[in-house]
Length: 172
Image (cartoon, rainbow, N blue to C red; front, top):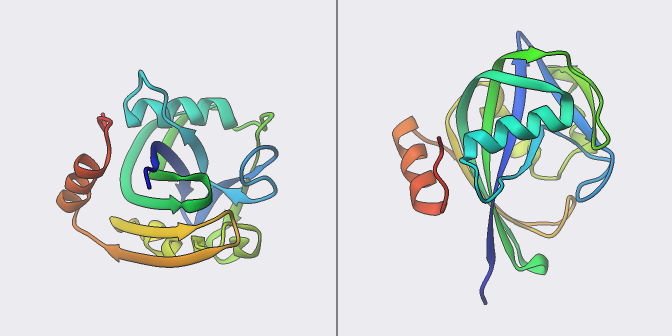
């Protein structure tokens, strides 16, 4: 069975012990809290897509991003593989604002609303919050149906190699 590959990004603004999440207001994953991101356009690098998505979804321009994770989502019902590039944003320009797609809100690490997020998020968020480099593979159909999971901490060099191996897009 042939699956379409989509490169995506998810950005997380982290400052001190707080994380900025957005409540999805429409589309796939509606009513779920998540980072900010989406599909990378044909003419963009992964990094360019990450910056554009943050501008569109919460009106800020990241000025310091760190590529920390790569998650391969296999979505059998959609016949799609979503390769999600995870970034931590530590500096940005602009003023955080709600958009048509996302409602941003700060959360203390201890108050992250996992019950209102995609079902696999609790597996890899610990690595994200510790700013570990990580790689994960998840097979699922929608926000609540997880069939298999694997997540592991990797070295930065391995993360870059995995990105080159799995993606058809340049990181930068």
